[in-house]
Image (spheres, helix red, strand yellow):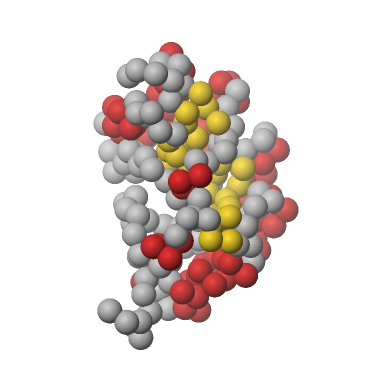
Length: 220
């Protein structure tokens, strides 16, 4: 690895009582701030963990209620409910810019991320849509993700790294991974790269329509 990468850390799909507190311990030890994109149904069961994350300076974002599939394939009402129900529960823990990360279905970017109703809701309620450019697959491979993540962080562009605080054993490597990045001269930042923010506070900031499933009546 050459140079000093700029890395933004984020953790999706928690909070998990067996994992998230240990992730927070590692981040606190290293003096790092991250963003936790929570699932509503897990937040409802384990709110205290997310309250701790917020109190320690981490940002809290919305990653839908059920994580049942990309919103582009859902009925309008269901997609909006996935966002709205979770945001209502996040409440005062929310980042002021109302951060929302859609489910990618394995980390893929494309028009499957949102449908028109979800986009309208996000715009009307002044959400900031947060995407990514590095998904090393820790949710699939709890060991080999580290080498992939290090490779993804070796280029010149800022990295928005997606990890998952899931109980599959992957996060036992987190401290070592962060140490390797630090030794390589990485700068850890909390802000996300501009290229990963197609909507900011409800305004199109980068062709957000690319991430919306065309309606059935749209012209080919």
